[in-house]
Length: 103
Image (cartoon, rainbow, N blue to C red; front, side):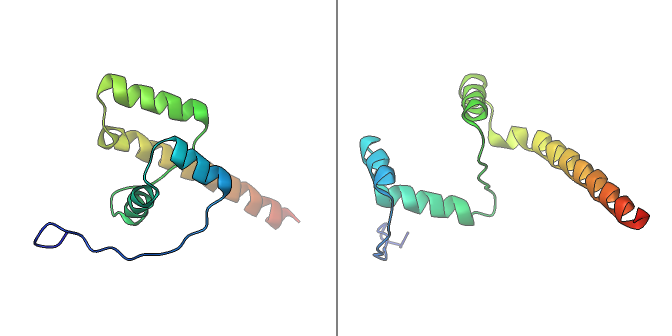
């Protein structure tokens, strides 16, 4: 924001699929505001975006809304999941390397 409280915007043209436009409009969202928010999230130093199944998204929303949890409280568990993922990938790579050496 500028000192007087107003923001300056840059006008751009974007192409979206008809179903995307319909969904944004039917949700009552402002397309420009939605895109600005998504860009802020994408380039944030502290945010990531994960694509998950509808079941996981529903569970996440249920936990956050009913338990008063915040994303920052999940960070330790996310780090543990990343560590577990890396350990699994390391095992897979080691197995592949062993198979190459046997040939």
